[in-house]
Image 1 (cartoon, rainbow, N blue to C red):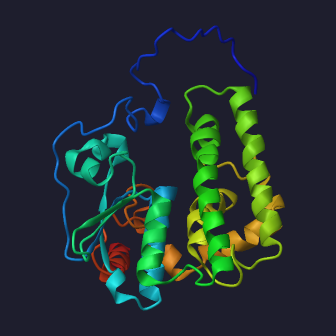
Image 2: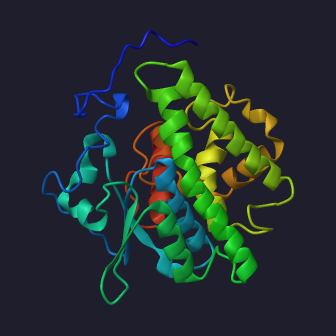
Length: 291
C-alpha cells in the first residue's frame, strides 16, 4: 500500500466541499445548531433514548439491558432511531437534547425537570449513579472504573475517526495515516491485553460501565464486528483481550443491546425501535413465522 502523488496545498481559508468525509460526509457540518425543524417522538417510559447501533450507541442500550436483567424495573426505556447518514441529528428536537449533534442522547423524565444527557460516557455514568449499579462503591475501584471509562472516551476517536476512517471508509487509501493510526490502535490493544491478563473484567471480578464502554469498540474490533480488520491488526494475538471480548459477547443482555436501533445487516439482528422487553420476543417470533 503506497501513497499516490499528493500535491495538495492547504488554502488560506478552508471551505467545505461536497463529499468531504467520503461515505460519511453527511454526518458532520462545519457549523452547529439545528438545520431543520423536527420534533422527537416520545414513548411511555421515563427514559427516552435517541440513538443508532454504532459502537457509541450500543454502550447505552447494553447498560440499560444489563440493568433490566439485574432487576431494575425503572430502567425500562423507549429507544428511537436517529439516522445519522440522513442527517437526522441536525433536527431541532435532537439538537435541543444534544447541541453537539451526536448520538446517543437521553432524556430522563423521572426528574423534577426533564434531564437531558449527552455523550455516551456521560450517559453511562448518569445511569450507573442513578441506579447505583455497574459502578464500584469503594473509592479505589470507583476511581479505577472512571479512569478506564475516560480512557475509552479519549482513545476511541483514534480507533473510529482515525484508523476506522482511513482503513475502511476513506475514498482513497494512503499509507501514512493508515500506518500512523494502526500503530496507535495496536498500542491501545496491547494496553488492554496486558491489563486483562490480571483482571477478569476491567475492574476486578464484576462487569462495570468501564467494560460496557470499551467492549463495543475494542471487543468488536478483535471479534471482527467492525472494519473487517481483525486479520490486518493480528487481533488473534491479543489472548487476554480476546478472552474478555468473547466473555462479554456471550452475555444475554449484550446480545439484546447490540441489536437495538440497528437498521442494517441481517433482519434477525435488527430492532429498529425498542419500547418493551416483549419487542425482542416478537422479533424472534416474526423470524420463526417467516421460515
